[in-house]
Image 1 (tube, helix red, strand yellow):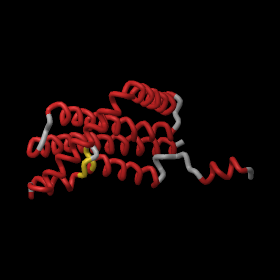
Image 2 (cartoon, one colour; image 1 turned 90 degrees about the vertical axis):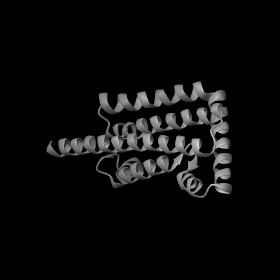
Image 3 (tube, one colour; image 1 turned 30 degrees about the vertical axis):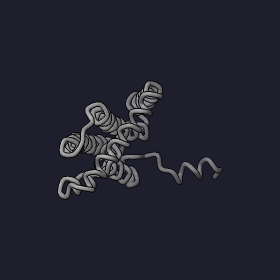
Image 4 (cartoon, one colour; image 1 turned 135 degrees about the vertical axis):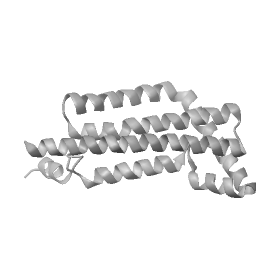
Length: 173
C-alpha cells in the first residue's frame, strides 16, 4: 500500500455516512445562529433584560462589527462575492452533475451558510446606515437570528433528506 492509498483510506470522502460531516453541520449552524453579525446572542439577551452598561456594550460591539464588515465589503466585496460564487458553482457542478458526494455535502453545507452570511451583512449595513441602537438593535438582531435559524432548520432538513436518499441509493446498488 503506497502513501496515497493509505491517505485516502484514512480520509473517508463519503460525507453523508460520516459522523464528522454531521458534527461539522451542527457546529456550523450553532455558531452562525449564536453569533449574528459577530455579536454573541447571550449578550443580546442580557442587554434586553438588564440594559445599562450591558446595552452600551452591545451597541459598541454591534457598531464595531458593522463598520468592520462594511469596510471589508467596500474594499474587496466584489472579489469575495465572485470568488465565493465560483466556489459554490464548482461544488454544485462537481456534486450534482458529476456525482461527487463530498462536493454535494460541501455545497449543501456552504450554500445555506452563504445566505446566513448575506443576512448578517445586510444587518451590518442597516446598523451602519440607520445607526441602530438599544431596543431597535436588539429587535433587528433577534429577527435576523430567527431568519438565520429558519434557513438553518430548512438546510439541515434538506441535507438530511438528501443524505438519507444518497445513502439508501448507494447501499441498494
